[in-house]
Length: 446
Picture 1: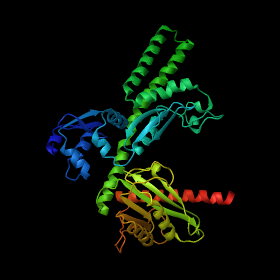
Picture 2: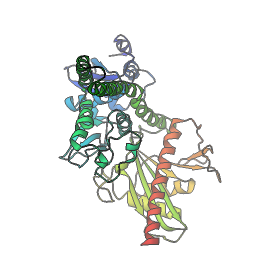
Picture 3: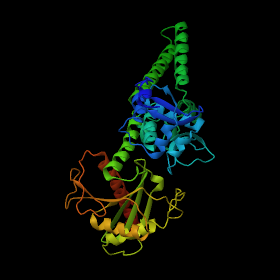
Picture 4: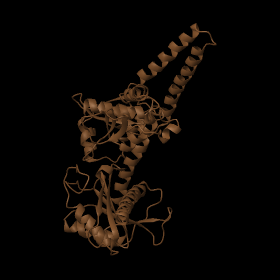
């Protein structure tokens, strides 16, 4: 197919899921979009920045179908349900070593839990796979406004904070039975995640009609009439609230922005390929005491906390030697390399190599990292980011240092590439500081 073929499809300017078919009639890829026409067309634009795998995929496409939805959240869920059903080859291939995210409903807990996970076990109900954990977080945040599930896992004496805001029914303090909580919240949420919004709406509408029929037979001054009127009002509010929340939730656009940031970063830095895995490093200490190092991982432009690593510095404690500490962290990190993701929380196992390394620091830190990579004969793109001397404000220009370059690069504050590098740097700093404080607390209080 070519650009003219795509334009002739008359794709709708609406959210939904699209499916690419090959010559044998098999679905090879399933995607989602906030705007179907714009998203599908973007694959064939001259300005498209595609990986070699996506170029290979486009050559095999002979037919395109799509399913329009009423909201971005429904498009996200539809894509996940279709991928789970058809398991297209390129949906797996294009993820490389990144694990998918899933929504888990944990029915075995005292309070049924709703959360994001990348690990599937034998208990609970799972919905996915989702390529963007960020989009899933935004989706669950929106869905809590419709189905007010509780974030607590066990019943306590006092209700949670969200009960005070009207965002929890009080299951956490026993103000509603587990059976009623499952019936009113968890069961409808599961139906929605399964793509059965229409059935939920029909159930609401049927209940409203039945109550209105009952009211016609009752004396308008009777207590039952007033109770029914109150329930009818609540049901109508829930329907209107569902529509408003779904229309306002922009979950796909946020995830797409992060993915586009990665593409922009590859262009600006002249990287050999789009960096799927970015690792960021930082050191935290006070005069060398309780020194800690951090490694954070961004996959597809988003933080991947399952792959974070923290290091308690073993040498040079008590000496203000950040360069030596960084070298120790990198040496320990690169003892664990493999094409497969690590299943471990600590330093055990093998960790996949990054496509880009971001160091919090200047030339000295950059040169230290370069020496470690040369020692291990690793050719990995590397960048160090630091602010000007004495400048720590949010508007202070950030300087990017590259191996072999004497002068640093200063990108505009609005640059998507700079935003991504800063997110990696700031997250590495936050993670290192958090571990350093924990070590200090242990040292001070035993």
